[in-house]
Length: 306
Image 1 (spheres, rainbow, N blue to C red):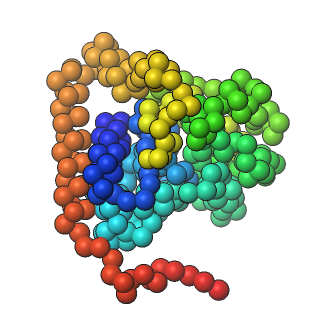
Image 2 (cartoon, rainbow, N blue to C red):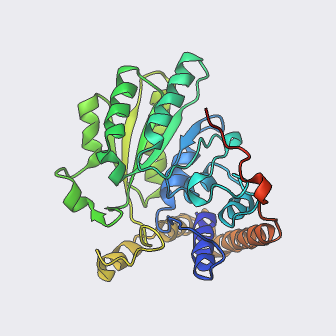
Image 3 (tube, helix red, strand yellow):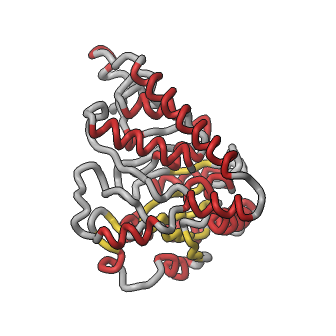
């Protein structure tokens, strides 16, 4: 979780200095959901990600140096510096890709799960998406197909309370998005997205169900993004008091305190982990800064058209 938070905080800092261009979507405050969900998967399992995907990439095993190089537009990045923050894929680690289209990864996950079933490859696909994506047509079509075909896919909604500036309180007439699972004949689970162990337990159960051939599940993890939707977001649609209340539920501090209280780790050991994560981020920045930009001749490489 520290590696994810420190990566996104460094990206925030470098964007402010003009060292990263375009825009980016940070997941600070949501670290427990990708870490716990990916911990319940095997290396051979796959994920699809979202435009807010840095945490998903890191949790599934991505190299933060290659990620930082991608965000800085360097040829050593995952997409040779031409994809940026929203388009990182890492097929070796089973990350089928982030996606700039809201809900765009949901049908892709169903397609990958269908491949797993038809080819008898026995991998599970975990599909990350946000609360806003569950009002897209692709969400409903994908869940229906996955259910009637008993596909090994887990629909994992990171409900961070806002789809851009739209509050879930204004966008839904139901209390829990997971209730929508009932319409498609699959289990629906609500979990505290800032509780790492609770998220792991519910995902592990859904993974076992999917791998056994029993079909998909819908999980709603209630969490909160501390930053704005993107770098142009002034957060005028919510109060600072609301942000403070959610920061008191910091998933990193909660898990850290639990480890110390239960005698599993000392504060010094956990501080050392944070320091090592910080060093890894600094190495990533150095790697990116020492890497070249793509040349003009590379512009049309990796571009496909019929």
